Length: 431
Ligand code: NAP
Ligand code: HSE
Image (cartoon, rainbow, N blue to C red; front, side, top):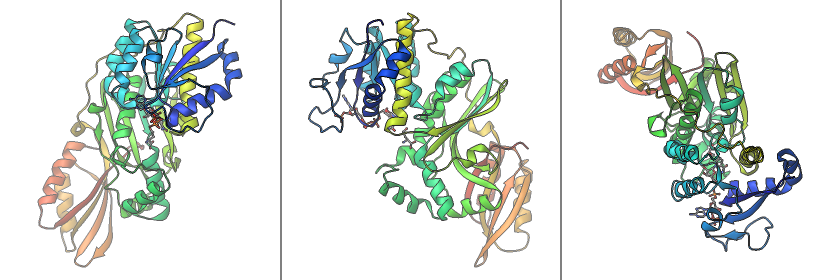
């Protein structure tokens, strides 16, 4: 066997602890797979006095990043601290110093990916980031390698476990968002500040990364159109179910005539679609390629050991590259520069829930405004009467978003309209 490969960990929280456990518990099998042992040399944390739940060799923990970044013995730097700074500075320093980097940091890759991959290329190092999207589910390497023969046309995923847990509970219990969020927080599924998850920001970062890899063009999280799930009501989920749909928060990226469509928002998806059956905190990514057809990758999207599974697989891949002297082999795959399609130009079907006056001619007036904007109605149902008001649910045919928004602006201003209670895009079925 050649000399052992040495790892420096930046961070020993949820993911870092999992990485340490997997590297030590599976040390023998990893050594066999790599051809040499892979060992942790140093661990950098914020607070060296914090009590840790794992047994560690004396002297391995430090709060000095230089103990890893300037350490000539360390081959691979594993960044599992999170956040932008100092993680960005540390990764750049590691790459510039000829060290290989594995990171789980979606915030950083989705915002500073180009800068980091430029440094990776310039210094002929490896920068791997499998765990940054969907935790334990293999998706970055499958897209870059196993599906490399395809032109990928669509990537659509449940890539946030917290919101999938909340929507699953709302569906099963018929409860409203606020009630289920409080339950999810009490169970530890949702953070005390749930903004990044429920407002779609976490999923936006992940779909930006997936779109960049799938379509070979740099997409940052600022390019992503985002809506979260706070506006989804128990009634929307009930009516969706009566119409044969499930409500999910999806990250969606599509190749549309050379442009890239990239968005995160709630959708109605047909119950027959494989993503409709993905429940609780699980994640799944549906990929359509022009050779393979439809594929789906399913599993745990977060957590100590599932995320460590992806991080350690990256470490093993880098270690194999070091042993074979082939580091920097795949590098950044953003060879093209594609425009992002504005949200007003996308085509979709829509679910509309309107509260209107319950009197003759109201439905005809609404249909007429929609028709004037080329919005064709596929289904219409009058649901409840609420005193002198009626609740109407409509599903449209495929229509350009801007046409629908223009029609809704007119409907909103009409004297018969009390409220446009919700507008949700419908995905996953052909016209
Ligand atoms: P975490 O539990 O908050 O742990 C962060 C670790 O980094 C802690 O050990 C902390 O030190 C250390 N740290 C923070 N700032 C530091 C600094 N300036 N200098 C040195 N050490 C510092 O975070 P996590 O949940 O493991 O997440 C880590 C990364 O993985 C994030 O990028 C996250 O987005 C990503 N990720 C997480 C999951 C998941 O399931 N948690 C899944 C996929 C991806 P102390 O221990 O001393 O506080
Ligand atoms: N907060 C994320 C989720 C997990 O709920 O899926 C970390 O990416």
